[in-house]
Image (cartoon, rainbow over all chains, first blue to last red; front, side, top):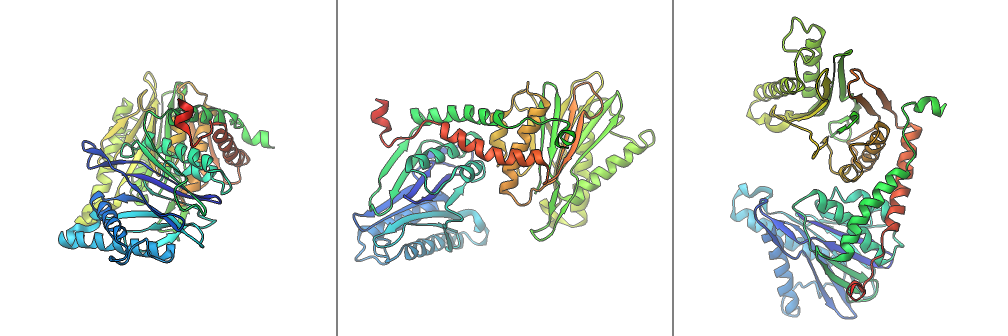
Length: 251
Length: 251
């Protein structure tokens, strides 16, 4: 499995991904799932991947190749004129890559080679945008109503993002929120693992404001993890007590 | 889907279940998923079900029929001498019921008719016990290391139980904890729905200490739901702040 979250704030975009890949529980490795490309002053595009590793690596390699010589190799995400076109291009690349693999393995390929991708970024003169791309190549865009996307093991870490998210929050609070969400997920699903990658894309700043790899030994992450357990227990005890005689008391 | 939790405390057992069943999103109904049988002073047995409704209703009906005339219709859960035998019997009944349905629908029946069951209870002279029964009829028992079982939509509500659980907690705190867990699940999965059923089985008290149906309009549940959002946000803000310059500060 995998866990990646892309979150849109007023100030820009915050992305976090884990790095574990596994084929069974006895074959685990660390692979980067977060990538970005920049044209200083003009555009920044970040991608996070979940799903079949051969598929996602092939997509990233193709994106990478085309950005190395964007003049010769069309289309390149460095030449697309809008983020919508970028998402469209990556969606096509994803769909083609999955389809090729499935065709060469016969119908039995089924859903084995699928993957999903989160795309985030901004091109000068336009708004920062955030997309979730499906294996079929189509995609949806984040909005005020749904300002974040998750891929991979999304459930354990979702309730805290729903409650804690506020579009006006600082990047630091955004990272803290995602760390809490990742901490809950790491505790529950062995196929999500440290280290984590973090990337912050500030609005109208066309290179990453902050990027970092958070190791399991990271003192801040450990502090969050420990304190969150205590804070949750305190929050729980701050709630009004249940009584077996609710009805009489309510009356 | 469904969400049911059975939790073992020092004082006894706390059970909670939702009541929504659905076949698609446009066909939802309320069905009880929690049942119990008592022989005053001698035994109390409770069951919660998740999965195919026709399967679980058939299992419950068969259990019910046999308890109506336990002398004539063997085996009855009211005559089994241990909770292990009770779990074994219910497991067999579940496996047979699923198998019959799959056979009469050909191999294509596949996993369509499956269900899982949580069994909780106590027989005089023995300890309270809690089991999780799989569609195959086999089962596992709760222990100090794994003192609660969930069936149905288990992920959203799991992190808070893991953090909040304490085997010495009161029944009231146990119910409060499960309400928080259900609240997170209800907010995330439409196929889990109010009202909720609650049952408390006190150790060595062979009839339910407390049972109640919690409606969506229940003032205590609404209070928990509202306050939990606020308490979570406060807990989140009580955590140390992230800084872009972790490394220097840590140094």
